[in-house]
Amino acid sequence: MKSRIVFYLTMLAASGLIFGSCAKESVEAESFGDIDGIVINSETETGLGTVNITTTPASNAIFTESDGTFTIQNVPTGNYTIQARKKDYSNASVSVSVRDGQTAVAKILMNPVDEDEDSTATTDDFRAEITAWFNDVDGDSTHVDVNYRVTNTSEAADIEEYEVYFEILTVSGTSYFFDVSGETLRAGQSRNGEHRHYIRNEEATDVIINDVWILQ
Image (cartoon, rainbow, N blue to C red; front, side):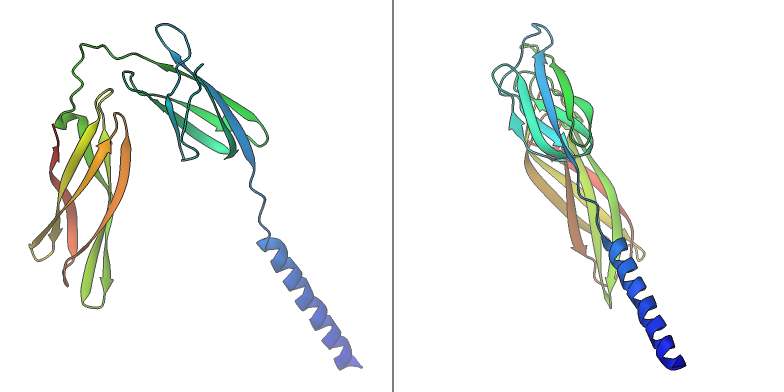
């Protein structure tokens, strides 16, 4: 009789653990809200149509209506930066906070670019940086994983083509080189990338950018 009672108590305890585990594994439902906005010409104070609207973190990429208004629906709650881009205008952005079941409101002012302003990008408008790197060792082979970011800092000029030249420094003193290239980096736009490079059985000590090039 005693052993039977112990058996039942053990089964009840196990059931409690299972139910407790299931409760912990339950995931809260994701919440959503909307973003309503308008883009305005800062000089005429009228709405701007066909403005390219993007967000960070990414959601839907859309264009404004003829009166400058836009709506992005069913956006996961959180903080967003809204970017506005249009030819002949300087890029502009604002930040909003999207809350569950509510509509965040954004008002963006864009400045017209002076027609006499030079619209040609130069290397001074192009910035490249290494955001992270690490050695990935597998037996006698090593790869270096490099994360990088390129940015067009110009307010008006696009970069049609670009190249970035990297150097991997190693413990032995041997250097390994690689380059990455891209196209159409809009004024004010940033782009993240990654590259994986084989360095035999070496160990990298640093990764640097030697030079950059853009089509002018």
